[in-house]
Amino acid sequence: MRKFDTKVQHLKYKVLREVARQAWNDTLYDNLYEIPKMIVPGKIPTMRCCVYKERAILEERVKIAMGGDKSNPNIIEVIDIACDECPAAGYDVTDSCRGCLAHRCEDACKKDAITFDHNYVAHIDKTKCVECGMCAKVCPYSAITNRKRPCQNACKVKAISINEDNAAKIDDEKCIQCGACVYQCPFGAISDKSYILDVVKMLKSEDNGKEYKTYAIVAPSISSQFKYAKLGQVITGLKALGFHTVIEVALGADMVAQKESAELAEKGFLTSSCCPAFVKYVKQAFPDMAKHISHNLSPMAMLAKYIKDTDTKAKVVFIGPCTAKKAELQLDTVKPYVDSVLTFEELQALFDSKDLEIETMEEGVLDNASYFGRIFARSGGLTDAVAQGIKEQNLDIEFKPCICDGIEECKIALIKKSKDMLDANFIEGMACVGGCIGGAGCLTHGPKTKSDVDKYGEEAMEKSILDAISMLK
Picture 1 (cartoon, helix red, strand yellow):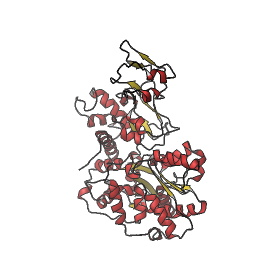
Picture 2 (cartoon, one colour):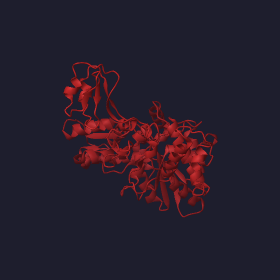
Picture 3 (cartoon, rainbow, N blue to C red):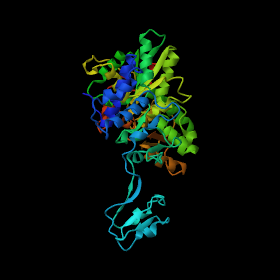
Picture 4 (cartoon, helix red, strand yellow):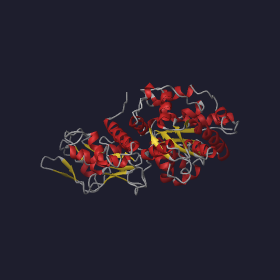
């Protein structure tokens, strides 16, 4: 049974499914304006004030499912018409204000933004308030609260503000495209662009005998998804969609672990290169630290490069939990190797657009990597793999890792290291809490996903990194 964390995810999935279904049937542009009516039939709205507004928002969701605004380089987009239900952000005085005589809030405010009514109850003038928070700190009743929107709370790099129309606005210079705001917005007003049409086109062309083979490379976090079916059935389902071959990106992780451990021994200090959101964060917020980012490609790009070097007729589609991978796809260092990116949400939509019941299929086999490559999916997995790489290659270095679980921990570690206050020679940076298993493109998030990844790793036939990459020779 299909399961999603929220109804917002389910709605997004339904749009993706219908767009893909029409694309398979070559009827997308004929039925483009009918898709919202297919999802919300009749005249009774399911989530909005009226069915007309709901369908207008669905039209915007369809556009994003078809690739979104091509002039906007950011893969995260705001649907302005859907972003109108959140209260205004900023500091507010609540009913807890007792109208006291001390007026500490007034004394603390350097902008004269606080006034009092005839009952001595405080009020904040939003035109003067600079949101410093001093009034909230000194209030003895905790009567002043900082009302932040869910998207702003989710964005740990402070890339989201509110525009003049009271809708969320993304600062592309700060955004690391992790998708946290996408997952947390209760109204689905922020979404990631989809490349699902590109993938359908590839698979249809392959079926028509075009001169290439489409490879699906799947992130190791797939082991924690599609709970209603077995992993082997997911692999069979991918081939039923038309993919020529399915390979696990954990093999690319094994390749990265070997090279990154050697690079660490050579340079003495590194930050990891596997998480594109973390890499972008380092370059934007800590430019002086950028020189320490590992020069290795990510596991996705490393494996895709190997495939294309081996098979000149290959096209490669990465499938995983990460919205930032869609941004990584646009990099000049990655573009030659990876042709498209899908999230697990989008893969589920693809399966259902073809009415594939993968839970009834025979189990395929996915066995390309080691235990250490597979545990890259969770926080700490990369560190364990680098330690193993150092051990297997007998490298002369004392390994002092710092594991950063989420972008807030990354920020703290980078600040400390930049001030020479961190005794570590390797920083593992994961923008999503929990690692890749916490990615915005996951079908489900939960405490069991880590154990699912570890169990999947233990099932690997290859027990060492060298054993796994020896298959490549």
